[in-house]
Image (cartoon, rainbow, N blue to C red):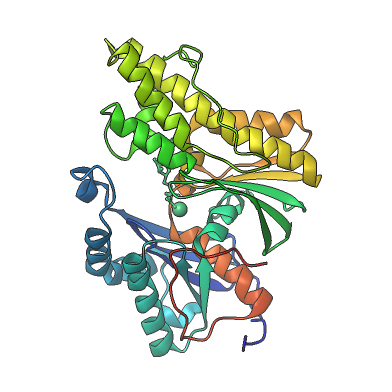
Length: 350
Ligand code: KG4
Ligand code: ZN
């Protein structure tokens, strides 16, 4: 049985924890929107030699750093556990071993302190990132509903209709690879390094996005498919050989990146028109990409809609967005009983 909605003061402090993949992150949020402290320990160096995230290695590192990270975060915010009113932690989707570390830590803190705990959907966090701000800054964007969200990350290319705060309907998703995955695989194939998305963006600088005619794959309706795009890169390299110099490599990278961006935004445009939304919001690691950010904002303008993008520091996985989603859901439907599980696949709350 779900406990009753939690009543929180406007300035209530939430401690958020995020360990769904390879970032260990802790944050203190005031009033569900204002970031008081945010610390993220990245594991990029650990996974770089493997060319991708190794789940067992990721969970072990989470265990090593999480307690210290939480202490440092409380210290950075100048608060202690008695000042907090809520705990929030990522429940899924993500790597099971990684999720378990954050959830076990959060349940431990909840048991010891008696604080209520909210189990958070990671994707809801990504949808909240554009609405967060730091002390003294004005709130980043307005709430306008219905809003349409595009979550572009390593595991997801989701179009999410937000009917009201905290109410979601996934109206489109990928049938195979996600947009971020397509960028990561291309970067690996081109020998650009890890993580692939930022490496490809860097390599694409100065490149001609129209140099190579990569396809914009159709999956019908508002769904996506990116596996064919990756294959077309492999075919292109087989036919024309490896890029001869930096300019040729930049041309291939820029053309490929443009194909991913165009495909993501084609679905967004269709769904925005279909559902008559008032606002577009972008989230997920790929939203750090400048080409995507610019094209997203110009699409919003073109459609006469508000457009919200997260600050660069909140695009990739972080605990501030988890604290925000936890604050929202705890005030809507109450905190969660402590016997909840973790999930590799998990639908957004309806
Ligand atoms: O949201 P996120 O940090 O983790 C997941 O939940 O998956 O997203 C990671 C994804 C990776 O595919 C990474 O290559 C991509 O986001 N990414 C980028 C950029 N920064 C991160 N893709 C394109 N351009 C970037 N600047
Ligand atoms: Zn993520």
